[in-house]
Image (cartoon, rainbow, N blue to C red):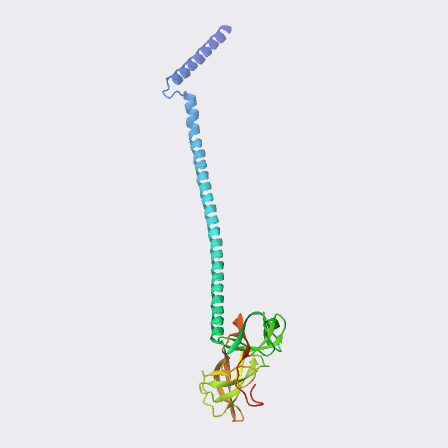
Length: 284
């Protein structure tokens, strides 16, 4: 029995040695220098390694795309900011150009009136519309020789008159105020006298037009020059919608102001002028 066990052990040892010999032989004869076991392990690992490499490559490309989108977003934001800045600068340039044109217009008008009017240019620094008066404030006052009731104009026409004067500012009552009334004639005939008065809400009305007047829509109403307040010939507005009054003796008409009072930024104040001598107790 012992002999049988001994024989089995010898055969087992021999078989093990033979297997080891074969493994060593196959490993040493591999042209790539890899053993069978090692090649089997590597072949089994290869698909997994390819998968990992593919994932790594995909992540790298995704990261590149993400960085590209971020750069593009930053570029767009920079471009938008630049466009906004350019738009702002363009707006400022247009405003400056418009101001230069307005001031040039005032200067040209003032130069054209030398010898007839003594004019003082002023900027509008405030508006005060309310239930009683419609006024604006200018940045010139008594220090510049301004006094009450001086007419206020632009090259387009009549704006109003001064009703309050301080040292450095003055208040202008606009022609559309209900307290305003100006002696006027209708051009081109100059035979149709009347009174232009403010009716509020930015509107004017001419009253006391003679019933025989040949005035038509589109004619101009200008200052008559028969008062001591306004010089003659200053445009007030355009005649619209002439109507006969109930008494049948006079006509009235709406007057479209020559000056857009809501968009004024600068005005001219007439400090003195030459006026024709008017009959006593006539005109406003």
